[in-house]
Length: 117
Image (cartoon, rainbow, N blue to C red):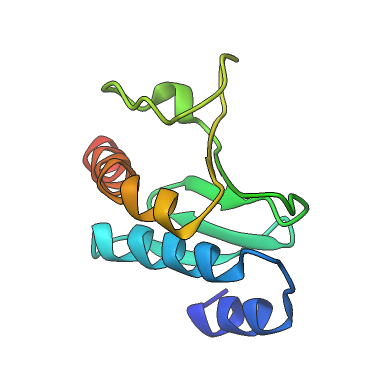
């Protein structure tokens, strides 16, 4: 699936923090030119040599970005939450929070692409 399909999905999606979601999307896509996006599991998903992360479209109090194998991402990223063996997530409650975490989010994307590239 292509970016056009993600655009179509976003056009139909209603969320009180949709502008925050769009900001996070832009940050992920701008972090590394190898990053791609598609619709998987009925949600925008970011990929490069595998699935990096997907938005959880059901959360309405914040924007939730789930990193499918986030536990495998090296380095210390303080806003990656979760303690399981595999997944991690990052939550964004406002545009200010999304902007404040942009550098960390971009660094996660770059680490992922370096691991996979």
